[in-house]
Image (tube, rainbow, N blue to C red; front, side, top):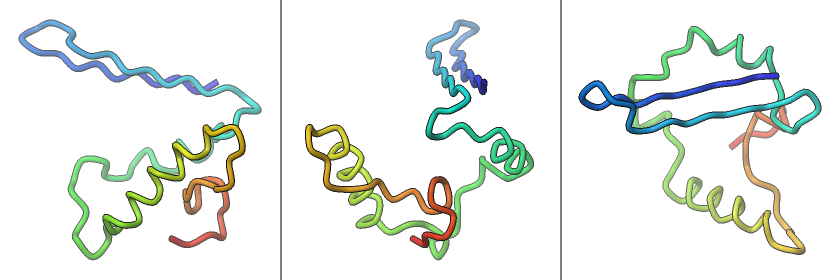
Length: 88
C-alpha cells in the first residue's frame, strides 16, 4: 500500500488535510515509480518550454470527466504513467 498525507498549517493550526491511498492491484499502484521520483524537484516552476500547453491540459481535464460517463469513449492522456511508450 502507498499512503501519502499532506497537511497545510496556518497560524499553528491544520487548515487542510489531503490523503492518497493506493493499494496493490489498483491502476496507479507503483511503489518503484514513487521511489524513482523521490529526489526530483517538485517545488520549482518548469521553464515554459517544458510545460504542457493549455490546450493539452484542458483536453486532459475534459477526458478525465468523460471517463466517468456511462459509456466512456476516451482514455485520459497520462504519458508514461500508464502507457510508458506514449508521448504527449
